[in-house]
Image (cartoon, rainbow, N blue to C red):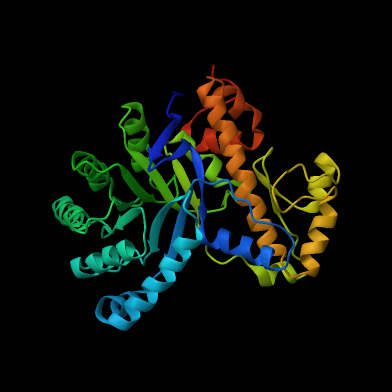
Length: 365
């Protein structure tokens, strides 16, 4: 434990799969970009991730059609099942629908989404909570959803979704309700830490109580303060796994010469341009991911740019490099060296001091 924060490491076991936490989850957009690279024979996508999140953006009108129209429901189920099957047998699958915060999700819609997930072989089934719904309504829906999943004969686990920007008066109560109902995994949806600090603090207290519940966070942005990787700050709140927001990468912008390509750097946890990388490390990629298997980073970027696959290459590099960096943090936690690890990441000093009031330079870690 750190003052105002906590770090925890563990192993989640499910169906013969072991998930060392904290860990980064592979999302469906990252897997798809790996397949694009493979199709051009520029690399064989080797993702080490044990958990796979299928992220589905669902507009209100599409969700209404899905719940009312059998044909549309069948089409979406076929799409989700195909993505789920592509994840492979050695990964747990999560379904995360990205929804308009203020859209009212009816019990009928929630039930249809559960049917969709069961039919698509999803392992952790999302149970949708309306934003700031009463705790009593959340509990009723959760209990009925658990019964629906159990009655299906499926071996999937219910995974209630709770937004981090929920009213703090409801957030903690809903977490407690889920735990008391025997839920093993809860999906919290990212919102900025500084605006929702009370809810993040609740997750810290939950971790300190050593509650045996898996906290997974979806829709994590790539950057915090326009500079560093947001994902690598979140373990300080006792969160176990993370999936990056898979909104489309700005491929059009990358093709414009005036916009510099920025690539994730695991040592600084920052996004560096090629000149910035060369200044720190020379032209060595400093990475062993399946994308950057050449001696010079400049050559790697040129090859993928010529193939019009620069965006997929950067996305896949980050997915793998960030995963292994999270495992280094885990090793530091297990060996009781997390303070030393955090202090070595200079770009974490400012956000940790600003958000958690922890001065890495002064505090005895």
